[in-house]
Structures are given as structure tokens and as C-alpha cells.
Image (cartoon, rainbow, N blue to C red; front, top):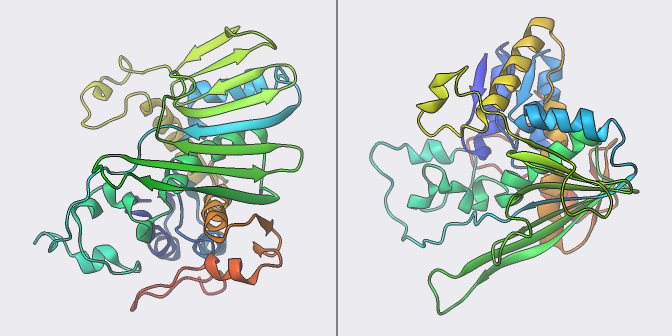
Length: 348
């Protein structure tokens, strides 16, 4: 078994090499930085008959599993026509440090790997690398994918019919600290719209849900996040059903002392890992199988492509490309830096 958790631009090559060697894999989300990488990863997992679990642990979060069963499956929401997914955290560094030589203990050539080589900056390491699009897909590839995947899992959704997105980064020229982001994206499922929003000015519309999803049905509304869920009957401002995350600090006292552990996520991680081990034993598919990781990752990548191109993109799931859009299809594969070679679904 191999755990793959480097920066996003290294996920594909490491995962493919691992399954080719005959091991099962846990790979962090998003699985890839471009769509073709994801297609190659899925093809490799299936060809070599490996179990691959993706780190999309909302699917294994106990109170969200309860919400799926007790609220959505029981029909308490009725017909769902809109889901809003959102993050109001300020995810971009406000610093602007100068480029410098990399530290002597870092092999920056290898760290950069297949990504474009750029001068070293302290933001590249260890986690602030998400400030650079060379290594990932920004906030959509970081936070949106979790909530989009959660919605897909809770509602049994596959590919959106089309994806559109707008937004940008705004900087006050006379202020070193005043940087704000805004991006919205619509994942269109025909009779259902899943709408993402990230913004960093003003307050969250609901302080209890700064990062989460709101499901709007004709019989009620469900708010869900890593911390809780609330069900609101029609016309009511107070929930009739509320559930908080359940900590396991007494059953697992190491949760109290584990450095940098997000204690509210620990139960979900345990369930997710147990599901992975169960799939390894049965040779079945885990709850966050690589195909689900591919769909959620690629959908978010398409949102960034839509924002870049300034138009909606219609996805052809059967062909694995954007319908009737040669310019968009050229963006499905990022150039790799030599000597690394971009993986292809046909040669893994």
C-alpha cells in the first residue's frame, strides 16, 4: 500500500508508477492538475487491477453519511433544484516575498518535477505552493472539489452536462494587504444546478457555514459542512433537525495530542481508511474510487478552463473531451517539463 500526498503536480506520475508496481494506493485530492492525467490514472488503476482510494473523506464523514441517509434518501427535501457550494476563507497568501535561492536541504529541481520551472519563492514551500497555478488549480482544485464531490456522492450525480465559471483576483494598488478573490462556477446537471462561490470580502452569509453546501428542495433546505448539518422545513428560520460533528477524543486519546491534527476530521479519516482496507480485502471499489476522484477533479479543472476561455464548456463524458471546442481540448493536457513525460491513457 502506498500513500501519495505530494503537491498536486506530482500526483499522477507517482500514482501510476505505484499501481504499475502492483500496490494499492491512497492518493490525495485533486488527483491531477489536468484532465488527461486523471484519465491516465483511471486507466492505470483498471489495467493493473489496483484499489485506489482518493482523499475525498466527506464521503466518510459520519454526520454527513447520516444526513445523506436520514434527510436526502428519506425524501425530506423533496425535489432538489439547486445546491450552493461555497468557501469564504481567505485562501491566498497576502505576502509578496522576493524570489530567492532554494534552501540547501531542498532539491528544487526534483520538487518542481514535471511542472514549469520558476524561481524559488518561500511561498512554494511547504503548503503555500497553492498560491502558484503551476502546481495546482487554485481554490477550485483545493476546496471546491471537496464540496462538489460531497454533493455528487449525496445525490448520486456523475458528470455535469456543462461547466461555466467567472471571477478573478483583485488587488488594491496602494495597499500591500488588500487582496481579494472571487470565483463562481456553475456545474449544470440539467434539472439541477450546483453553484460554487468563493469570495474573500465581507462576512460569510451564515457564520456557522463558512465552507459547506446548501441543498434547496421543494420540501425543505439542508445545510451541511464538516462541522454539522441542519434541516430547515419550508419557511422556517430555525432547523428542525441539527447534528454536530462527533469527536472521538475518548475512544482515541491520541487525537488530543497529535500535532496539527484537525480533530473534527479525525473520525472521517478513520472511516475512510477502514473503507480503503475493506476494499483491498474484497478487491472491490472504495467509496472514493479513482473514477469518482477523476470526475470531481476534472469537473473543477473544467471550471478553471471556462474562466480562462470566457465561455461555458460542454463535456462529452463518452469521448472524454469538450464537445466541439478544439481550443478547450488543447487545455486538457498541460505541457510537461523535460525529462518527465506526460502520461496517456493508452500507455499506462
